[in-house]
Image (cartoon, rainbow, N blue to C red):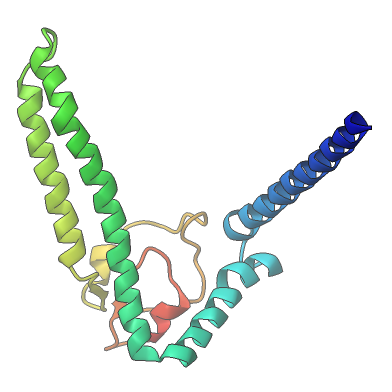
Length: 187
């Protein structure tokens, strides 16, 4: 009798675990499809998940907390991403400085100039991070357009669509961004 109840419990647990695994897999595949594969211009699911839902949530958050608080929240999120980046990069460099450089000193096969070049690479990484954090994105104007318009559209990342060009927005500079978004049009 005890063996039978253990067997039934085991069956129920296996059904629950299998159902949870299948549900998680289906949900993950849906998220991958909706956010990475589906084209927002042709797929309703892609458009909803990548444009309509985020826009709706942003508008609701803006109504709830106000533009000023939302601006501060955006700044806070940007700083949080910078802290994550610094944690990963500085954590990696600290491991290299603490443990890797000892191995370079002990090695008969690696010259010590690798150690010094590592310090130079570290300074270059931190300098580029500092510049990226403190340099404004710039703007495209009729005068600066030739500096950026070098390549034809590849129809993979950059699709030629009817966007406002520099002549249509004569004195209104557009933010430089890798993709044209609806946010760009209002900048």
